[in-house]
Image 1 (cartoon, one colour):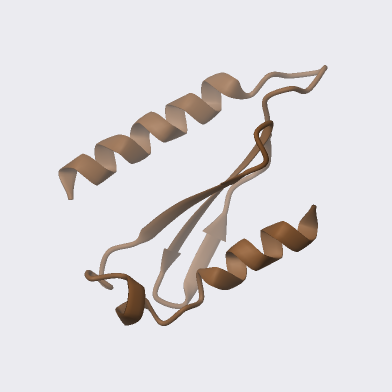
Image 2 (spheres, rainbow, N blue to C red):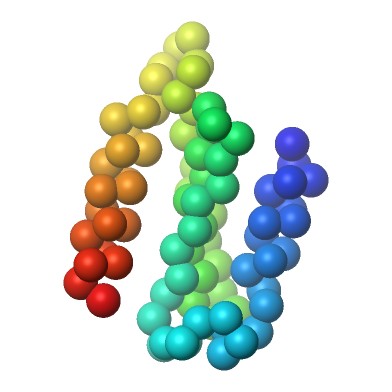
Length: 80
């Protein structure tokens, strides 16, 4: 639940120079439990968290949006 998300977000606050060779570029991350997805972007000490995307909701399947975001992140990574 929220505890796992908090731990993952906490891990993003490791000093950038210790884990990221290009600290002037943002870091992207994804947190998932297999049916829900959150996307995270950090730059320095600032961060942003996406809305929660549920892929097994009885009301709406967000899988197309999750795949679109992953495809976009893939393009960003190949351009860097």
